Amino acid sequence: MYVRPALDSAQPTTFGVSGKLWRSALVMYDRQTLSLWSQIDGKSMAGPSAGATLTELPSQLTTWSDWRRLHPETLVLVKPPLEASPYQAYHERDFVGLPWFENRDRRLPEKTLVLGLERRDAAVAIPIAALDEATLLPFELAGEALLAIAPASSRTRLVVVRPRFNDQALEFVWWHASDGPTAESDLRDLATGSRWDWQRGKAVAGPLTGMRLEPVAASPIYWGIWSRFYPKTEICSKPNRASEPGGAPD
Image (cartoon, rainbow, N blue to C red; front, side, top):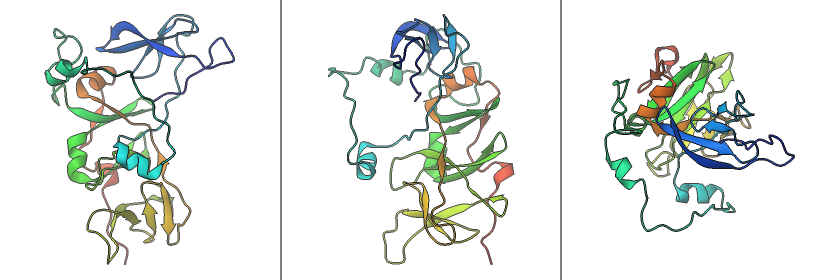
C-alpha cells in the first residue's frame, strides 16, 4: 500500500496497469506523467518521474470480520462483479510470472506466500506457514527489533516495532485472563509485565500503559517475486540469533 503522490498537479495522481512486467511483477503507470512504476518496491523506472519512490504505508493481512470488529465505520472499496477471478488458474499453477521464467532462488518454492520487509538494503521474508506455527516471531532487520504477530485465534498477520525498555527491546508472550477464553487475547511483556492490546497497538495496563506498538510495512507476496527483487533476502522462520527470547523476570 502506497501514498498517492502529487506529481505535476496539486491533486494526487491515480494509477493504472501498464500491461508490462518487471522481474515477473506488475508495472503500474501514473495518469499525470505516464511514468512507469514497480508495484513491488514503489520505484519509478521510466518517464518524467524516473528515480522517484512511493511512500509505503503499513497494512495488515487480515479478515473482514477481524477488521470490522475494530473499525466498524470502515468504507469498503468494491470491485466490479466478476463471474470468476481471471487469476484463478495462475494461482493454482507452480510458476510465478511467465511460465518460461526460472526461479533463481530455490530456497523456497516459488508460490510460497511470505511477508516481505526491506529496510536500508536489508531484506527479510517470513513464510506465512511459519507464522501459523510460531504466532509470535521476534526478529531483527537492519538493526531494528521487530515482532511478527499471528494469533491462532484469527487470520490477522502483522509486523510491529518492539518498544525498548531500559535500552532493551521488549520480549512478548501471550496473556490470558484467568477466567477468559483459552485463545490468545492480549500480549504481556516480560520486562515489566505490562499488558498490550496487540490489535490496537498499545499497552493497556501496567507500568508501560499508553506506550504504543509502531506498525511496519510488510508485503504479502509470492517468494518467487520477492526473491527476484531482493536476492540477498534472509528467510526468517524462527527467532533469529540477534533476538532470541529472554527469560521471564524474577
